[in-house]
Image (cartoon, rainbow, N blue to C red):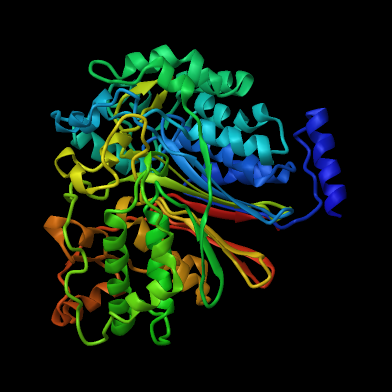
Length: 545
């Protein structure tokens, strides 16, 4: 059956008859942050496409309909599990600092919204690698859904409407295509078109990613002026990188996530590894003891990653020691049910200057062959740098470096030709037979670590996906910073917020904070794929029937 399916898909690709669907299996699924992106992914999978094909189509649609969160002007990381070879790959397409980058740029007024904050974008280069290795459909076909939306128009979604309003309040002047035609910012329900982006996507579809890294290079360089250090050479020399995933054996499964420059991956795995080695306790985020343990484990993991994680291509040390069984057991023994541990951090090297804002997007896919993809993609904080070229926004990824005043004690110190750290933590879990049982990740800045950890815990405990992703959040992301040391965040208006006084009585510094999340997960339930996307955004889940 699998051989016949491969032959049929290859035949369709050769004939370019992509309107018909190969029906070798009826078990594939997609979860994304936007209904149009989910629909595009399902359409590609129905046509006989792979998870890699779907990822390309989904990202292009997100660039159109969710421009505040991700796009071809940003960076992305992805885990890809090839069902045939059982190989797990980690693809790094994070934005990279220009070779002549000056760390003191971060001291410039309004830094985040200038060309100084723009890194060399990597998302397209990463997608190119994945498609070459695992794609089944022609590259140009994967752009058709996005081009149709950019050309024909789409309605501003609730999440895009809120994000645009927030950016305008912060001082952003909206691009003309994000207005209502009368010069006013578009609001939810207004139909907009982006013909400039449609033209850019047509060119990439026809001529490949060189359209951006060569053809539009001079325009990109001009867009980051005055002051930007990115050059045509920086663009032409950018390469996505394949890295070795981080994996950890837990009681129920082996969980894999993304390695450095992500600190999110190691922090998720360490948090769950520590919890796995505490005394047995039913996982419930309404249970005071369990939430206390989750907080303590998260604080330890945030402390451990603080001065270790950086770009491995520039010499940062290995984080695998943090996941060693003996180390995890020792850290678990520090957690006491009736007391809050003393500050686990030692010297704090980073200031809390990156509050959570609308940003980043999660894509989770499994195809009919069983290939699985978990991709987290971003242009960084809401609408990135606010600068545009070719109809798309450019990232402000350079804000993810440690501030210049603290670089003496951080592996994440800024320098030219370096990828800054990220909290993005896509995950794929395997059962004892090495079969994929969970695919997912989250948006949400530093709180990504907690969003992903919490979702994995509740989903692996058997909770229904929609309920698991709607549960109230607990976060330790701010605990790692000097001016919020030890602080715990609880999502207001949710049941978990009822624990605030009890946690405070134990000694936890607690506050409520909007925790918007952006999770998207797919899980195996008795041989059938189920899933959900965070209801706080516009996400949807779809599966073949």
